[in-house]
Image (tube, rainbow, N blue to C red):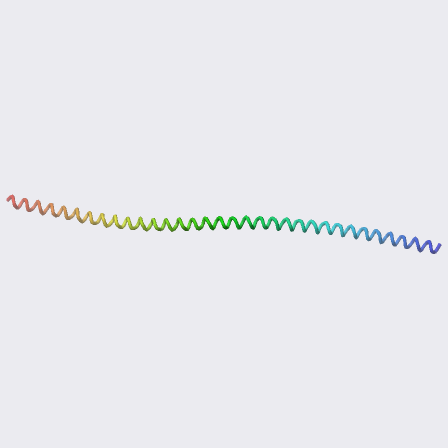
Length: 121
């Protein structure tokens, strides 16, 4: 009977240990599942990050191309502005020269008119 009690006690301890091991194994399984979920989320995040990086890189490249095009157009506009300014200067000089010549012509007409009048008298 003592031996039987000892066996029963050991069985009870063994059953208790088995329950503890089963619970611990369940906790380990849950932990491993959570770890796998975190790994999957991390992998998914890395994939998304790489996608966004590629998209950002493409956008930067596109904007750089647009910026270079704008710089080229700006240079063209500066050249055109210089040409317009030069053309305006030439036009102004021509107008001044024309006004001077018109004045000369008027002066010469008056002189001719005065000479003709003096010859008539």
